[in-house]
Length: 177
Image (cartoon, rainbow, N blue to C red; front, side, top):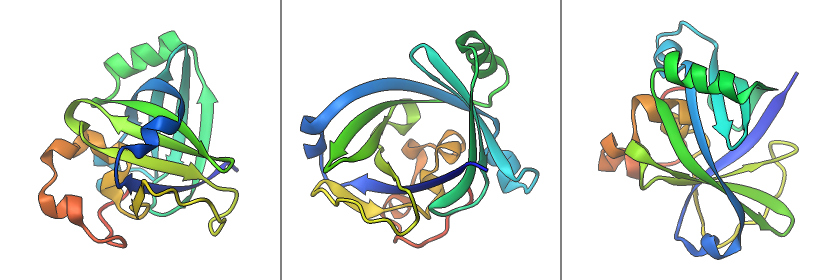
């Protein structure tokens, strides 16, 4: 079984930009997305992702938290393009920046389109309570806030968030993944 252990943070500032090792444009959509999850019609999201000349089909358990079942399968890029264009209820675009701090990789997603202005850092860990560096640009943890999950950003993009949603306290549960 594939398990993803990931912590997610908003950022204090842009000082991380000087540490970017590489960046890639990502486009993704969901074959089983937020509406089905919210209605209780699915137990997992099913995502199609395209990054450069690579593409994947991803299945991720529909639950909040830092540890979730996840399966990732490479697919032909042309198939991904067709799926994104014909079977997804919307597409999310972002730049993913890779920043390494003391040997730990942070993937910083800078969202585009209706999610412009949202920048989130993710760090994958070997176990849920693993130690990792806390660079000064790393802000409040939002791992348990469903609105920050990519699947929800298509149905409820950042541009439509209220100030209360943007300022919500960590630990608030805001719908599933």
